[in-house]
Length: 84
Image (cartoon, rainbow, N blue to C red; front, side):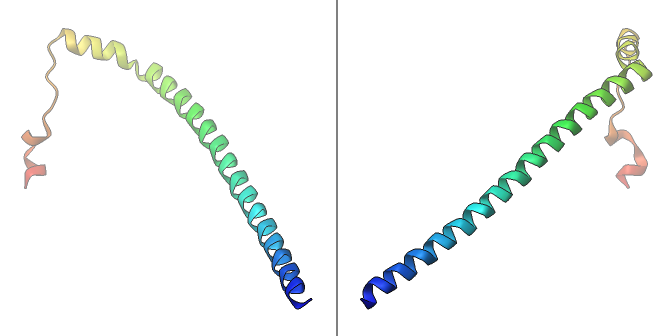
């Protein structure tokens, strides 16, 4: 009889632990899903801002103009105050 009681208590304890772990996993899954939605929103906002800034400063036409005039980009190694 004592053995059955111990088994019953152990099985009940395992059931409770399983329920607690399951609720913890669901909570973590909810947090991750919320973070993924937030990241997708920020990514869309970032793409919109990139397009707005590119259109505002007219980056591609300036780049084409600079390449047409044989513009040489600045080498950061040639700037003296950075090397000191």
